[in-house]
Length: 101
Image (cartoon, rainbow, N blue to C red):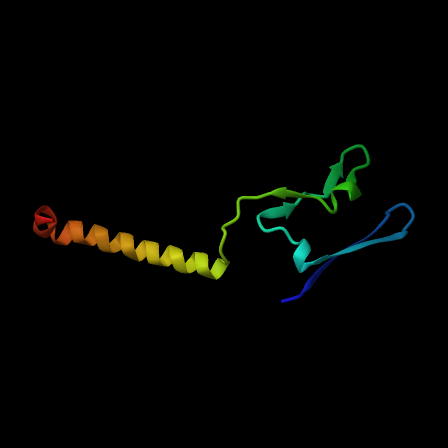
């Protein structure tokens, strides 16, 4: 499967009204699982406004991410909850059977 993610930032200067645009794209082979982009928008107190840190625009940092899809993770979590409920119900409603085991 081939795909491309395109990111764009558009902004303008309050003082001059000049428009600024930045764009980059990522092919599927360039996307790193378990990483996220570093924040590139910073507040500058001396200028009383937000500034885009263009050096951070294309950088990533490791992030704790499941090794499966969101669908599969949800499915596994549901199965785990059902399994835990069964075990707890066995202990509550059939204590004599659990003692025999």
